[in-house]
Length: 176
Image 1 (spheres, rainbow, N blue to C red):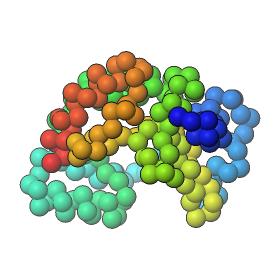
Image 2: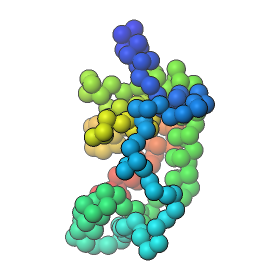
Image 3: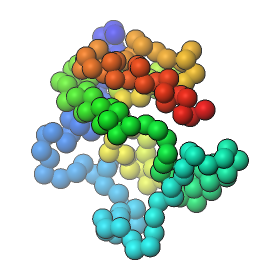
Image 4: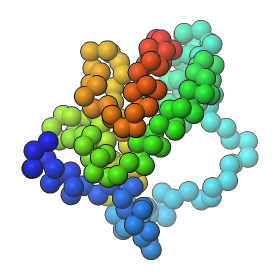
């Protein structure tokens, strides 16, 4: 990474860095208007997230995913054969990555303005009211195999590659 790239990346406000500063209030660029805020944090009686079972026939699966995506914008997949142990391992290694010092995470920073989407980033997209998302992420493609960019996979935590790599083929098989 050259000096210019490094300076650009340090100018980006990382959400985790803001949160760790123990701010007394949320910066105004992240505060949503009242009509965008959840009315409460309790589940609404009788309303459930669409559940889609991968055990269903392909044509039904396509129909259910299309309907859920159109009507809800999201859904939960069941019968995917991904073990809870693997899900927990992925969660733990992600938490370890986000627990690294900021400078180390910046070594994996993406640069969407130059077409580099893999890596560590902060969602800088604004909504219609010009408010930003409160979100840092780590993104990398896993399919097709030609799009894998191991250079952007973190070396730390050391378990990252050990957890992700052998399980990519399992996930790709499930998705197809």
